[in-house]
Image (cartoon, rainbow, N blue to C red; front, side, top):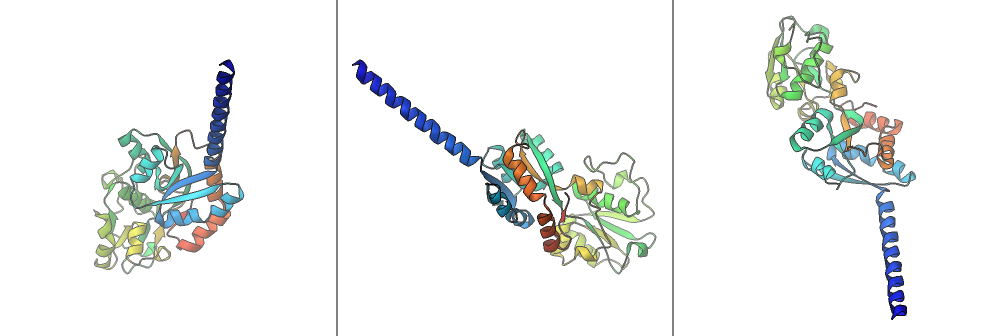
Length: 276
């Protein structure tokens, strides 16, 4: 009886060790797979450019494309993703506050600049005194538009104005005598096209592209070193505590490379700008 018990115990130990070994193998394999959620354009396209660089470091990059701005954070929080790449920090902070999550930025990768466009205006210097300036009226878009107008010397904002906190037309200290009109963001291109000659407008990058406007034709764009561009840079988001993990650091290193910067410059004609 004792011999039988000993044999059973030995077999149980062997199976336990084998299972443990398999689990360790699975964990090791998981550590070499980086699963990232991303919007299709430009985020997933940019991620595609680093698959080989990560493979050379022993990692497999899996890209999951999302069409909305909620599911990528839900999937990151529940562990389905290792990281996501689609949002800027103010959006992430708002999501955390609303959902009780603890997601953080691991790195800034690019921003999509706002542009200043004119109807019959060739340069910033040609804008007439008292001209109408159209800007988007919603949340971060209005903030970015006002910072761009200040960047180009049209208005003055308070010394403590912050892109992170946000500003509106009510915060303008000096409007320079211009007629600044905040309107629905997606209507700005059409209203500019139908405006009086001499009108200028600040337009979101995506709406400018949809309207056939090119960043290269803009009178001015957000400065990459400016407060708004830095604040609204698109980031790699991860669960708090994972930002220094080996595979997230490998992902960031691959993305923040000269090759990726060159790809962005060559592919998006200024509509997407590397910020690292």
